[in-house]
Image (cartoon, rainbow, N blue to C red):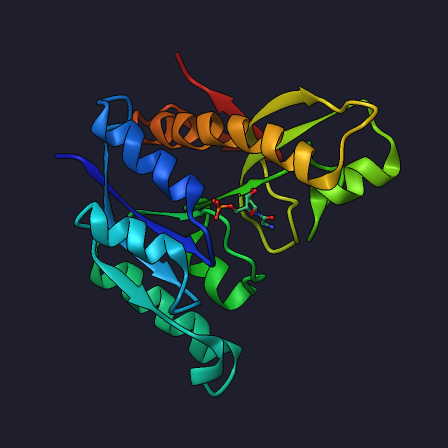
Length: 202
Ligand code: GAR
């Protein structure tokens, strides 16, 4: 039986689409059990519905506090039987309240080569800093912001005339390969974490 993942999103959902497409092409052997969005009008929800995937909307404003917000996300994931939580363009920071319940079971895609350019607008930070290469990172989520053990990274050049938008587009193409690749490694049971390091088994 295929392992089940829950994908948590906030917006456009192109990384979710890449997961859906990789599954359809037989390159990723998991089932997306649910897509959870913190915005009811996220385009990602339409992508999920089109692929016949269950969806849940948990909006921060409908919750008393952050704990209730995280409890509801947790509930939606558990009710669907998710074994791994994939943050694919989820634009909020989860606290220890949530993360401690999913130790080493949450992965995130970040549009920079961590530990450079953590947080928001990573692509703009890279352009402003003047780095010559950037890329994306898939990592396990710990209680820091974009600090967890790194599963894999992909590199792209930064060109002299790059804008935040042009760099983001180049990085996004690599994100669409990196995230399904990391999820497939997890599904095959090939990821082990020792300290800060993730080892990929043969
Ligand atoms: C992606 O570039 C992802 O790496 C980034 O948001 C975008 C979502 O695009 N995530 C973060 O910046 C997380 N801090 P998508 O909705 O089309 O997948």
